[in-house]
Image (tube, rainbow, N blue to C red; front, top):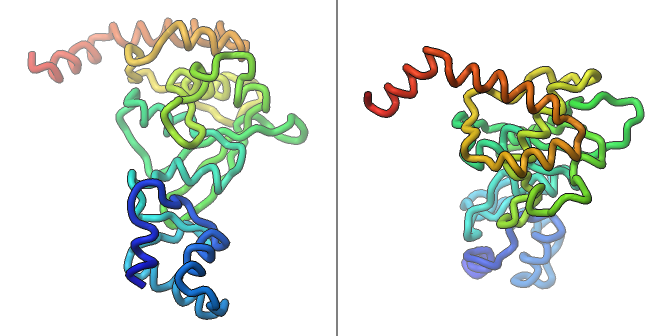
Length: 235
C-alpha cells in the first residue's frame, strides 16, 4: 500500500484519474488483482486521503504537485468546455467574491436551445455550471490563442477579457436566459481593454461593451463608491 501511495505523490504524476487509470496504478503493484479486490484498494486510497472521489468513476490525486484544482477537473466532467465567466474572472483576481461553483461555457450547435441555458453537475468537490454558447464564440478561432486562453494552465481557462466578453454576450442576448451583466465593481484596470475590444468585435457585441463602460464610469464616479475607495485606502 505504501508503494502504491508513493506512486501517486509528487510532480509529473497522474492528476485526474478515471477508474481505468486507477486500475493501471493499482495493477503495477498487484498484477493479478481481482476486480473485487481492486475496488477495495480504491477504497483504501480514498480512506487514507491519497485520492478523492469526484463522482462515480472519477477521482483526483490529492498527492499531486501542484495541487489539483476544481477547474482542472472540468475537462473530464464536460469535454470541450472552457472555464470562464465568474470562475475565470475570480481566478484572474478581477472580482473578489470566489465561489465553490465552477462556471463553464460549452459549445453547442444552435438547435433547440437558448444561449445561456444552464446545466448543473453536482460532484463531491463542488458544483459545475455549464452555460451553452455558439461554438464559434467559445474558442473564437481567428483570434490569437493568447487573447482567448490563459497560456499557463493545463486545462482550457478563458482569459479575464474573454470571460468578461462571454458574460457580456450572454447577458445582452435577446434569446438569453442568462439575465445578468458583468458586475460594476469589477477591477477593470486589471484587464487589457485592447484585448477585450478585439474579442467583443469578433463576437459582434461592441455596442454592448460601450454601453457597459458608460454605466461603469458613472458607477465609479458615484459618491458612495468614491467614499468606499477612500476608506479602503485609509483616508
